[in-house]
Length: 114
Image 1 (cartoon, one colour):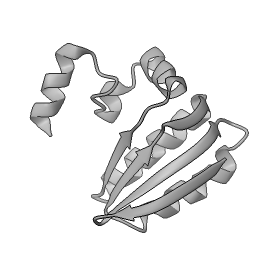
Image 2: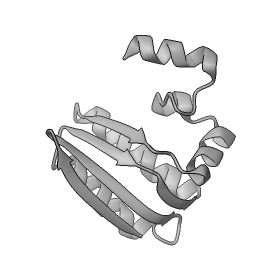
Image 3: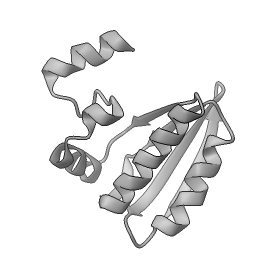
Image 4: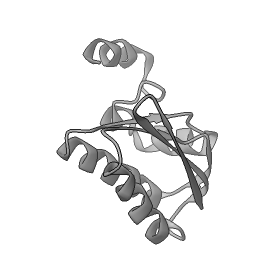
């Protein structure tokens, strides 16, 4: 799996491409955690993620937890169908505070909290 990155107005945008699965978790983890040291605001665009399993979810949760602990922001965007399917199956929209996968009645609450 490749991770392309670019800087936009002080925000580091990451674009992982391919499978975010157990087969790639060991390679992805250091690259994703290293990104936390490069910026206070990170956007993780998931539009090119073709497959996501529980190992990939664990990496995303680790990124979120580490960002919060460091006082940094992590925003998920561009959810691919594979990502949406897993997030909806596991009910992760609320955990990530992610309005793209929250039920409509909770989207307004999430926007009000932001």
